[in-house]
Amino acid sequence: MSTAPTGINTENVTAWLCQRVPHAAPPLSFELITGGASNLTFRVADQLGNRWVLRRPPTGHVLASAHDMAREHRIIAALADTSVPVPPTFGLCQDESVNGADFYLMGFVDGQIVFNYADGNAYPEALRPKLRDSLVDTLADLHAIDPATVGLGDLGRTEDYCGRQLRRWKRQIDEGSDRALPLFQELHAALTDSVPPQQGAGIVHGDFRLDNCMASSEGTIAAVLDWELCTLGDVLADLAGVVMWWGDDENAQGRLADVPTRADGFGSSDEVIARYASRSDRDLTNLPWYVAFQHWRLAAISEGVRFRYAHGAMGDQEGTADEDARIGIDYLLNSAETWLGQS
Image (tube, rainbow, N blue to C red; front, side, top):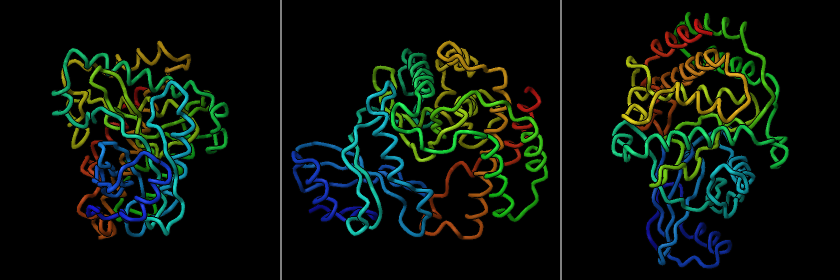
């Protein structure tokens, strides 16, 4: 049996998988696709060329609530029969004696992750507008789903989504930073005082952007991935996140300057907004507020990662600290201030 990477008990996982996928032909091979401080994703293959994907929490000391495999599995399974493309699921294991932590298995979806500018530039230019529209249509389709009709009505609290997010991320900085961030605090107060009325409640992906999806060779979204932040609430936060990550700002820093959609052919975030508006009946008048909120939120996330990295709290993930932390905090806060001024 082949050697497995850290995070996989080859013998136990093989036995578990073969019980749920009778046509699997062991021995199985396991290859880490994504790691770091987020959930670990492995490509699994058997001797006949069948492929699956296994997701589990990072190794080491982690908060179970931050890496809830059952929640992720539940969301993907619930969306299986909707217009939102997700991988098929094959099972959830919550017996930690099998692999040291909960994990779930899903089908392998053919396609590619268009992760950075180089990937975007390599994607066929003629298909880039089509991929953009498919991305936006997928988001609009997700937001149009009534959570209760797919069994997700109790996934989380629905009211005051942005208010709860503002309190959560301010608390993280108050308790998890070693420096004063006056503009962060000022923006928190300004954002809190001007939260737009929430237009109903839908399924919020939480980190929806092109590189968290699988793109097909035909210019469509083949699967939406990375559901670990998914909850219920104000779906316009998702659209604002797409706008933030689109790459329109020529002064962007770090990962925000290396996004795939900066490549010619993907168009501007204005086209993203117009496409969404054509597919949704939600009022987008206050969208600049949400974009400001997303920049502020990313600043909080980045500062938290910077603090943990600086104090050696990343454990065995220290060498792969989230690249979002390389985005300048000052840039994000100044951008938030600019967008808030437009709201």
